Length: 88
Image 1: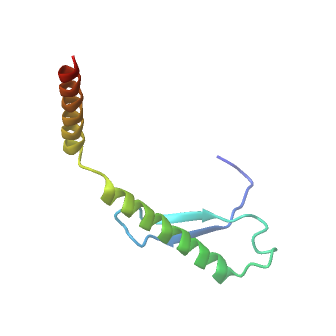
Image 2 (image 1 turned 180 degrees about the vertical axis):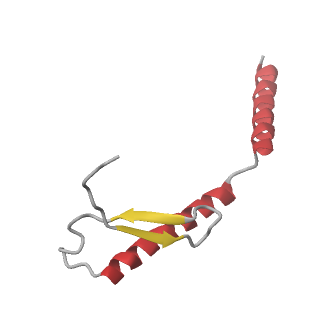
Image 3 (image 1 turned 90 degrees about the vertical axis):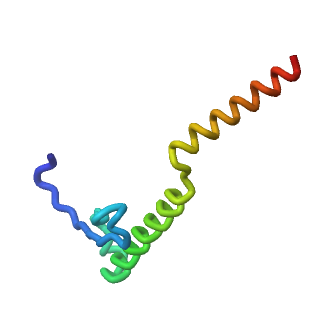
């Protein structure tokens, strides 16, 4: 626990609540002194959250069910053993 510190935080609602409820962004202390507008900062936080969701949904769709991993491994192992048996 940090005492005596104050931080500016932006909370963005998730575009896909299946992955997460909210995204929390902690702003740098000098974020507004560099000329950034609050709307720009919020827009960038929403864009980052959207890109995260898109990336993880694509990864999740590409994954095979665990049963297929076992089946694939067994077939590959069986194939390798068959080739070795034929060579010997």
